Length: 508
Image 1 (cartoon, rainbow, N blue to C red):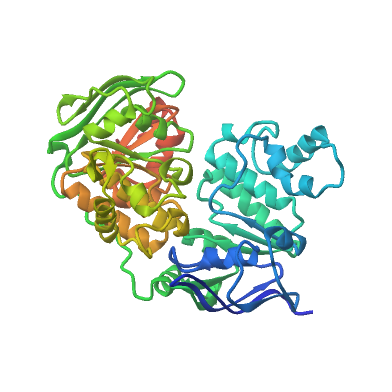
Image 2 (image 1 turned 135 degrees about the vertical axis):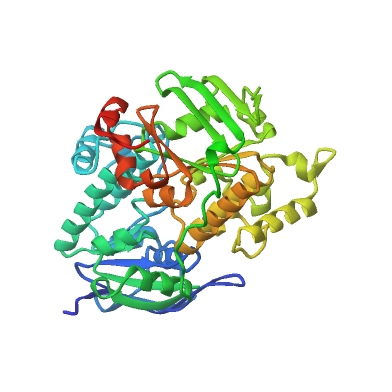
């Protein structure tokens, strides 16, 4: 029997005038981990949605074990042994973890009553290999990384022959990602074929056997991972040689530049305490630390999303007199959430409506939205961010993940902010879009906008930021800059308390 378990031949798919896939070819072998690489909008997710039965192709053929199949729905895909873990969380928030994990099995059951005790027991067995998650907890009470692990647990219950993982580590801690990689290798050793979609070259080259590249809805090339390089893959993704350098950093002495934001003695019970720092005009300030250290919570306290936070915040030398986030927006502080689907965007609304959502007064007159002004605002910001879309009136849900992120950034820029806090701004974004976002952030900083970046990607923090504040257990545990801004120093400060760090000689 051929070792090819899944074959895609001459597959095409269009959404109106947009050709998402064009004459695509793809083969997946038993027991391999096959990476799928490409910029946002390259067609990767569209192809996976067709293989999973969410979408139907306009033309072409899919074969399993050498036999043509029609995959009419996700349920049909599951019956064929295909499981998909989506990049975006797709759980029911108001039911338990166990009920989410076994939703498909429960719906297919012939029994009228549900054995909840058995359900929770089986869920606990699956979760024991992934993380410390209570199967009886409501999903809405979980962190984003825990919700992603529940999505993975769902797929592991399906007895898959083909498992598709779409950016599965985007919301995971390093420890959780390590557990996932071990599970992937175990499944591959058992003969399960895995399609692994990722923008992270270290993951592709550390854990995958082959890599296929897509560009502009077309298949480009497949390489054995051992016989290619990250530079070759990036160049194939974008269709040109990429100079993958970060933008030039702040020129001059940032500590001598005027302060744009000053934070003193900021605290919130149980979340963070005694936070002090200064953001200076022209610099990009980074927040590093482990997931759960309190980075996002500190920023939400500054912006008054957390209304219980106490302390002093000064903007351009004047005390910030804001009790709610809406007041902070008017004063010039905006926050881009790490959860773009849950908090950052209205997916069923148009691009233009999303961009204008923070301050409708900018595009309205007499309480009525001027759609022409709203469209123009979105078009102008879209061009600035190189947003790929058919029209600014199309729903955000029709865009790729990377283009959705650009809409979220455009939404922040629409109010001409003085300070922007960006929480994981390039999560799930391809190499080309990352370069654009990094350039935009530096251009904004050079224009006098205060930029604060929270990121779990250490190379991004080091490459983009002028200084990095390292947060540990709700406190600023140290500051690194210049030659001391290394992955080793950041992780050291993120893992060791301040006294130990000073004793160990970590450079501030």
